[in-house]
Length: 357
Image 1 (cartoon, helix red, strand yellow):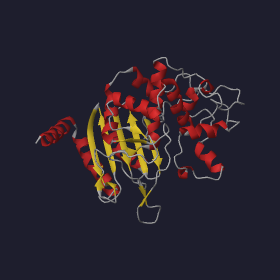
Image 2 (spheres, rainbow, N blue to C red):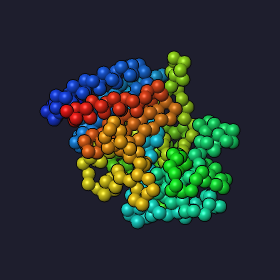
Image 3 (cartoon, helix red, strand yellow):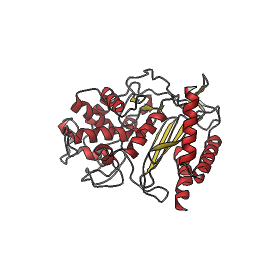
C-alpha cells in the first residue's frame, strides 16, 4: 500500500509540475526507448532531472539474459568512462581541503614515472588529458597482448607499465589527447594522499553523497550485488556475454544504479557546495577549457553543455547536463548494440526544442 501511495504521489507531482509539452515529451521518450530496446533484450535505465527534481525514470529490457532478470532501479551497471568525473571530483575535494595541489608534479607521488622528462607533469594535466602520458591500452597492444584479456590487471600494473616509458607523447599542457592512464594515476595519487585503498576511499566518498549502491571494482571476479551482465551480438544476430577480466579503476569500472546517479544529479542542481560548483567548470590555470574535471565542456545541440560518455564491451552510459536550462539526461545500459549518445541527443531534442518555442 505504501508503494502504491508513493507511485501515486510521484504521478500527481509530475502531472502538476510539468507542462503539456513535457508530458508529450514523456510519451515520445517512451516510444524512443521501446523502439530501441525490446523487452527481452539487454536493457537500460533512462532518467531526467529538471529544476532539481527527477521528472522521468524508465527501465526496459533485462540485466541478465540467462536468468531473465529485468533491468530495474536495483540494477548496478558499469558506466565506464562516465566515472571519470567522480575520480576528478575526489581529487578536487582533496585539493580544496589542502591535501594536495593541482599543480603538484606527479613525480612527487611516483618518482619513478618518466624520470627523463624534465617538464613538470602536473595533476591538472592528468585531469584534462593534457599530460602526454601514453594510453595503457595502446602500450599493452604494443607488447602483442590484448588489454581486456589480462586477468586481474589493476592500477599497480598500469603504474609499472608506465614506469618503463622514457618519453611522453608531447610536452605537458601543449595538446589534448584522451588517455585512460591519466585516471589510473589519479586513483593511485588518491591512495597516497588518503593512505587508503582507492576502492575504500571512494566508497566512503559515495556514501557521503548518499550514493549507497555505487562502487568501483574491488577485486577480480568479485561479486557485485544486482550487477548487470554486459552483452553484444558482435554483428552475428545473437547475444554474447562479454567477460570482464581486469580490475583497474578510476578511469572506469564504476558500478552504479540509475537511482544513485539521479541522486547526484539532483544534488548538482540544488546545491551551492563549492566542490560541486567548481567541478562543473574548467580547471583553474588550465591550457584548455573544453575538458574539465572528468567532463567535456563542449556545446551540444547548439546549447551550453557539460557531458561525458562511457563505453566498454557491452556497457554504455551517457550524461548530458544543460546548466542554463537546469536539465540533465542520464542513460546507463548493458546493451552493446545501443548508441546511448544518439538516444540522449534525441531525448534532449524534445526538451531543448520546446524551450525554444
